[in-house]
Image 1 (cartoon, each protein chain N blue to C red):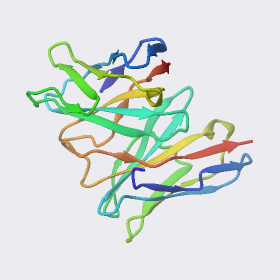
Image 2: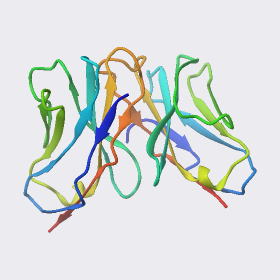
Image 3: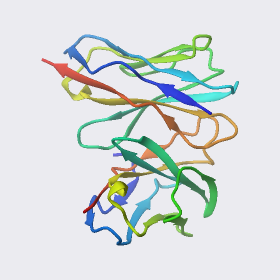
Image 4: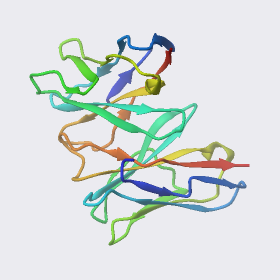
Length: 115
Length: 115
């Protein structure tokens, strides 16, 4: 158990809908990262937050947004869902800003299925 | 841009034997970090080992060791004394040391340990 929690574990929804994925980092970790894992794209970095502020942005679609709250938990919002958004979404956390030897620990993931 | 290459086909390994998983990378950075993660069939991503580009010694963590050859840009993972629980996908990832916080992942190596 990495100490990173994600809810829900599974999510099934329809095209055009909006969902929210939730992540609680390990105790003491200030950074939260979101990754998407799909069969065709592999593991792709989406976005990072550090202590409430957006720190880095990757291949995140405009239909997706995220935030980190004062208690450091984070939410990833996915809207106008398409079939291609079906994937395993990981949250990871690290102690610091993600440089040097700062290791990212992953949560169990949320498996999103869009029908 | 950073690129990680893992091209080995799926591997079958006899229990108690050692296995080496290949990873080559491409970067123009001088300072960077290399990581290996394990993803069992249950889906979670488990951190195994870290190697910094300026570390003089190869990293070891229990049965895991990293054969780091900087000039060849390779960071192979060695699992000694394989166990049935080692059956999983293994991902090599890298991050540059001071800039980008995202992890860039390879496509993974599938390992099946047979009794």
